[in-house]
Image (cartoon, rainbow, N blue to C red):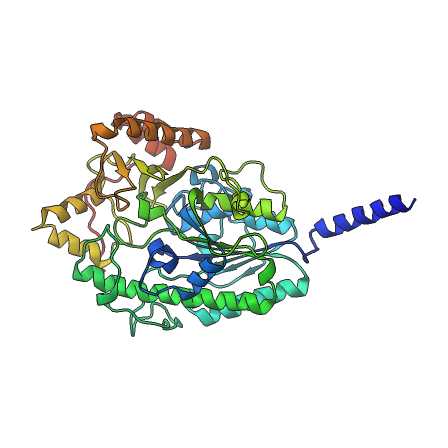
Length: 488
């Protein structure tokens, strides 16, 4: 009789603990995203410029993933993939479109599981569907560049969670280091704050995919100011978490939504476009100072990981896979490559690109490259204008500009020697076998995910068929001819 009563007691206790209203031991999630951050701007990823002291402390207290990527290197598409756990062609969130009505999301899934869902900053970009209703949301204003306001909003939300005794999913978005970059007297937005340190053109770190010219140094100095303010903001959010008493039971993940807003990075599929810093701390699970140099992880994996960690029932079909075993120090098969994509840079002109990357190689198919379509994006700043002018007398710079504008249908890079993707080896006979393998691997990714542009890859020499696929997929044809960028 005693044993029966004891069994009943523990059964009831288990039901209570697992019920949506019980928050004591259910893990919380705080996902912090930077906007347009170059991974190598962090000290934990090799920077010597001392821009990220707070982020480097997080890295030292948790895990650093060295092979981490976003699956679409543009702010809105990236955040829609995070929210839905689906590639854009499966959620309907192409470019700046929202996902299809009824698409399950992190927000409504965790709300059904008894969590409060909060959002701070980048509200339209982070709200995946028309019917998404956050429990807590801030107005999308200059708050994204104010560490003090980020502290206040975070503290307010966590106080509500404590009052209602509910666990939380909180997405915190900094607007830094997105353009306009931070300069003295030009902080970027109304109510924006000064960074805790300023940087000069003489001390900037120039990525290998950009030329060392005065315009690049000037813009990168302002960019580094913005990175420092991002770090200040992250520090204040961590202070609010510590002050709340939730830190010991909260998974903290820091990422960027894409690479730096410069030519040859953001809004493309080259290595530095999609590579993101990926810092994780989960007290009691992750060990301090661990660096994973082996496994590829990407943002499409976040949703299934959160479900796995918290025991919340989620959608039957997601495109990513939980990496919780990696946080526990285990190995995980199937993490030797990553699939990335660009569809369109807005709700208008499509620029379809697909890429598969391994630790050594990258293969890219640019379905938009037809010799006429002229690529441009909103991240060129003064750099591309300067490169265009210099290219009139420098054939090497001119070749870089021409490649940026028109591309070629296929690209292949040896990332172990050329992470800046400067030397396209697609015609290299010495790499013919590897190119074939990588092309096949990309096709497998596209087939398994239902990518409608698979036929474009399989028929890459049939321009007429590709043009029809583009219209069928995006509802509009590729742009024709040159379009001059707006003056900055």
